[in-house]
Amino acid sequence: MAWELSIICAEGTLIPGPVAVMASFVDLLSSRDFYHHASASLSIFLLGWFIGMIFGVVAGVLLGISKIAYQLGLPWMALLFPIPKIAFLPVFIILLGVGEGARIATIASGVFFPAVFCILQGTRSVPSNLIEMGTVFGLTRVQLLYRIVIPHCLPSLFLACRLTTAIALILLVSAEMIGANYGIGAFILGAGSMALMDQLFAGVLVLSLFGSMLFGLWAVLEKKVLHWQK
Amino acid sequence: MLEFQNVSFNYSQTEVIHNLSLKLVNNGVTAVIGPSGCGKTTIIKLIAGLLEPSSGEFITDFSRDNISYVFQDYRLLPWCNVYENVAVGLVRSGISLPEKKRCINSILSLVSMASYADRYPFELSGGMQQRVGLARALASSPELLLMDEPFSAVDGQTRQLLVQEFTALRHRKTMTVLLVTHQFQDVIDLADRVILLGSNPTTDLKTIDVKQFIRQKGASALCDEMWRVLKKDVSLAMQRTVSC
Image 1 (tube, chains in turn orange, cyan):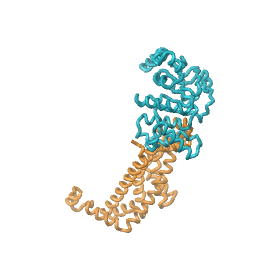
Image 2: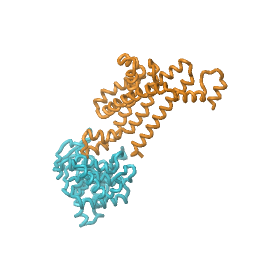
Image 3: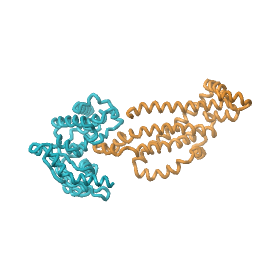
Image 4: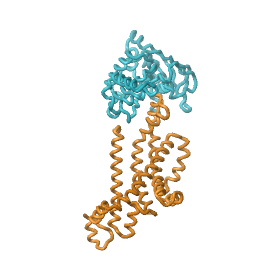
């Protein structure tokens, strides 16, 4: 209400009111072009996120269970983690060409590091008394890993999922704003450059709703999978 | 048979156990009692193979696969239900799935937990969790059962119930038991023999034949005798705790 009123008062502003944004949002959902943008973004998002998570989880477990891997890997992690991953995009464009590959790699690199640190923390916090119990009852190293270490890491995995989906979404839009013809990021950039502010806001609303849906999905899955927690 | 011959154990530079010699009676319950920090749990961990002695000989004819452990703090896997937790005790048994199922159901009935098979640890009381721990340890029908203060984390009434259940179980299953405790009542209720340990470093102060002692002088006299032997070391242990 306040937003709509302020837009009415500030005559001639480029910022659209919520009614115009909602109208544009409804138009967007009913246009074929939107699904073209959305499907391009979704495939890049999912691929980048999955690749980053798979490598991140494996690396996190390795760093957590192997002292050598920890000592060798951690300095590299500390060196690369603080770099904004969008800065890798030009490197990936040189390596993989101007296409989806570079954007997928950028998202994967952004997802990888938080996933590693979450899983590393989960692995290193496995209570030693449970490992001792498993050893007494004759569990092998592999059995200790999948019966004790990995289940103990599940809460950390869900934390990683929450963090990385948000990061992947940010990187998706950023990467699509650099040299992409299709995708939500490219759509938002195109709307902005043509001063179609209602469409720009509608695009942002789509991203926000998608992010919220993912958060909801993690919450439902977490409740289902971690039902053994108090 | 299980025997420690002049076993010593060091934690970094500190000698925790010094030249300890003790022997377990086959098919009997041997209790080990001593002041806090006297190395009781270290002894049990040495037998379980979790620690290696620094010197001395540890002779046993029990294979590692036939040794089982009941922990003071239960150590159940929170993500596994009661059935799955008991199944951990059968990991090395190599028995078929139907046989495993039959075995777990049977042991759960023995500890009165059959109707809780699909419950998770957070849904159980401390006493119930310890019953699951006991079932897990007994599932593989071990020849040697190590019990590390198994009743110290449960209330008095639950303890009484668990003692009764354990005594009934002992009549059904033949095994050698090493019970580490700091409760005189555990010794009276369960043990055939008690080894009294002194601390700093751990030494064998005295061994008493519990059943014979109780028959001749009574349970109260046994408590008095254990206290007489341990009093000095308990006071020293308390002083160490206070100065820490």
